[in-house]
Image (tube, each protein chain N blue to C red):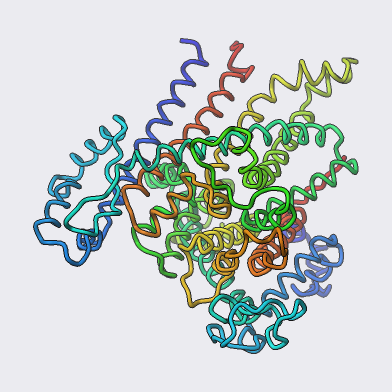
Length: 311
Length: 323
């Protein structure tokens, strides 16, 4: 991975004087070579992050603030000028809810992905190092869990535990951690057999040290790419569940349930296409973010694996 | 015994073991319910005796393993239990058997899935193979870019996008009934079928393309080309026998994916299928129905993956002609 640190040489020690580039400079150099799609992805992700972080400052009204006149169309199609995208069925400003929805939907998705990486990653590392009955047990359990489609499994578990945000996060994180487990275990299995890991174990380092200091830094790139992919998958699952009415519950604003709420007039779209906008807008917000994340991941994988389509 | 047979039998055994564990997981979901759900299902006015009778009907007075075997025996005989809904009134029991609820809807879902598969499979195989053969051409690049974008879209976005574009031509509500003629039925499901086609064509085309490219890079293909075999003969005689396994995997994987995608699409278009039934049963916490739907979905998923693996084993030239 890093060829400048692999072997010791006297010339190398002399050359130590050269200024090492900071992480920011290296990222900038990599970015300058990035294709258009990666730039597009990066800019979109930054915009979403800004909207999500500064939601209370950016949104004109409160998340669940109700106005007297309900169901006004867009301002440019003859609605009230103070509600740019109109209001929903009980008179909440759609633009404000879209902005707060960014915060809620993305926040929950990130939290879920982090939790699933904490579970799947640590168990995968333990399984790769341990290689005993524990590895067998975990791997077979993951095989069984993965043989049920995760949306179906999530639906079934939600029917038991009920739809609250905490049960949503835990259920999806556990189901998704099976994929993280598989990847971590298979990548770490190649690193565990290295001499330096054996050296660390022989000098008496504990399991935690070997996991964190010896193996984790060497399997980071595939895990980072996987984080992006898993994030977009989790994000889509949460949006789908909310769309089905089983995810994030009102009055919390979130894009999936906004799509659902907006679809009341969908039969009449043939006569007036603007009626589809209340559901198309949040659905588009979901779609744009997943496309952006996929573009970034694509570029990152391409860059770190050093793979190039030669022909 | 022939090595192919042994491997197939092993894989079948593994599939049944998986199904066994999955059924245990689905079964134990009912044991995880909170203790007072009898009152929840039967309503506030239910007498303690009624609740007790309900608990006995579910077999909660017996040990778990006895209940499990009774449940499995019931499922194998086509008895999936009785729905929870319609019981809130303690005087009359208007609940229906789960099989009665699922039967017609399962048929609807299978109809939608097979129509989608009939369009999507040939289309994506064609696109994938041609894109792989004309690699890095303008055609390949544009097909790739379009499919990468549609892969990242959620199903409901594609569905509403199609509604906006095609609402004038096709109905946006797919309310099919049992006695509808085939032509009208097809017309009604045009939009949901198209949505799912878009989703799985993208997946299937990309996987087919990758499999073919992988295959064309192998040394024996290069050897065949170098010794002057014609292009069609290279593909038909040398590449295709080895391509069956990856292509079968791709098809089965995506049909299994249909099983999941169908839930959201059915809800968007209000299609009376099993996915919508599952969503309804989950939101009303009607556990027997949710259990039955989950079992059907999981079994289909496992079965399709099993078929793909077996096709892969049976068509593997290395196993067919052992040394």
